[in-house]
Length: 401
Image (cartoon, rainbow, N blue to C red; front, side, top):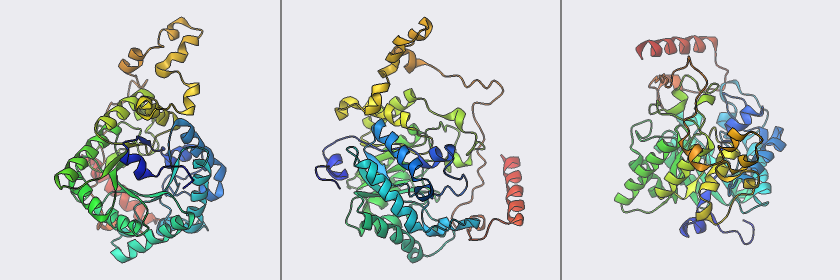
């Protein structure tokens, strides 16, 4: 950590608001640097300029955590289902750390090294085998001296606990996020109980990321907070949700929606929605507030602007953004100038422009999770027989719904 910078726990202990960055996987997929499906972060090596630029945009938007682009960067994921990158997890993780540190040094930002769920856990590998995968990533984070660690995007609290136990050996602060909603993890463990297990494992910061929209995630973290307090424990809380509306999702979240992942754009939250999210998260006692898939820099800037008074600073990116549309006063058209006010944007009900489309979808809800044969992973490419099977399963799920 650079001299003079306060650490993550020092900031949270002082009641400061920490703003996370956004969703690198989706943002870089749209820009042509990540392949949807494997969702792996080899761009840190193959296209470092793209990763660096996105870090800079989030920093300018107000983020003060640069999370290493190491999502799904474990060796078992990098070689899953026919993936052949000719790059090791260590190479990708090291490059990610260097890029995050380079940009973090340009502002008051910390570097967080992240590990996520593994194909090995879904395939029922042992605790020892799964922990060994986390340890390989941790070795890189220790070599690169990241400021703190995040175990994020876990559908099962058991695997998240294993990750925390490994990360805790570093002596660095550890945060842990599950990709769950109010219904709990994929084995039915409640958010409150999940949080208690994570805190007991050694996480100082707990929360939720991905899979659900902001208000749903805030609700899940509220349940975590209640569970931790009831157990007589203490923790800080974080939330990094989707930038998509998900009122129709079941416990699996947005990956069960038929629009996932290539037709989610009609669900994107506006910057004004983000103001409401930031305020609700803050009121709930959450002080580490960021975003995940779908979040672009302007979404993070909206969070920073909403909480500017609490933080005592406006983000650099606000130089080009009038609060509540005030810049529209300079527009040539008078009817657009009339929109340069807060009450207009706060009360607007945006239309989708899609008259033949429904407002809600029906999640597919196959109901399979860790331990089910359909979730067993392998190095070989998905076979034609496997594809035939999943198409039959899809047909069956649609008919039953």
